[in-house]
Length: 379
Image (cartoon, rainbow, N blue to C red):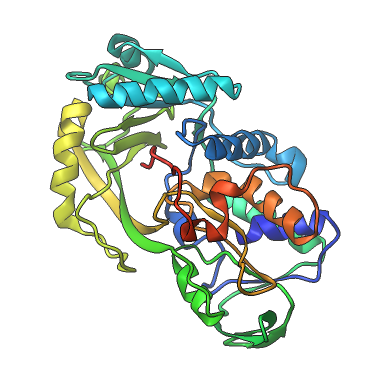
């Protein structure tokens, strides 16, 4: 988010910018730990609109930003089993089509042709969008960052924000472990740590961290899932398959298979150690939905943090309480894929331009009112 905002501001001629990164490298937090999926299949029209703009930019990233990225448009396949969820997906598909997205409702048998090897027992149907896919979080981040640097933006690493000074209710200074930066504008793109940055300004940013795991599996006997023996038992493409009710998902990653699943018992916190005791719960679902997983071995795993808001929509825009304090955080598991559009929108706001985008569902102060609706398709 920070790199995207910086790049878009630089394109508008605002280059007196410092991008502050706590870690030794960019994209080592949630960005570098996510599965890289990009999809149009959301339940909220605001998120669909963010996807339309963002995915179009990723598809043309090298021409627009100057760096190639690994972009695969092999589709997203949502497997749906509960009758109540079938009705919800039918409503979602109608909305997505209304907004110009080609999304189809498939029979279970058609789903197996797109993702060979899946077991569709109990599945009532599947939502399929061929325009969805998987791309490269590190490449996108570095493309934005290097493009911003080329315009004069400064990127400082191994530097932590430790305080903020206000002049009344206006932003005046950001304090870091390497000194202070006088500035009338602070963009809070701290992801799961957005609440802590807000506290420095006396602002409550309703973002909570929630751990998610990713595992990589290879055939137990060694080799690759591309071997002939797995024909028909494992997808060859990078199609991203999601068993909606369990939240189990997977896609091919090189010779292996990347997979994960949400833990309904996970509580908010910054712990990113891998809970190996959670793996049996995931594999139990995995083997049922993708039987070849019974012959798999987990080669490595990691955990990262979602940045969750109460309604699972992001916060994009200014604080109503502190002039010059902007937040772009709380994307609730779909942040990386919305970074191109969200960064453009916030850059427009900062420079006084009309973003031509309805930000009501993403407004900072919406939680003070009755929130009408949020995002339901959280994976």
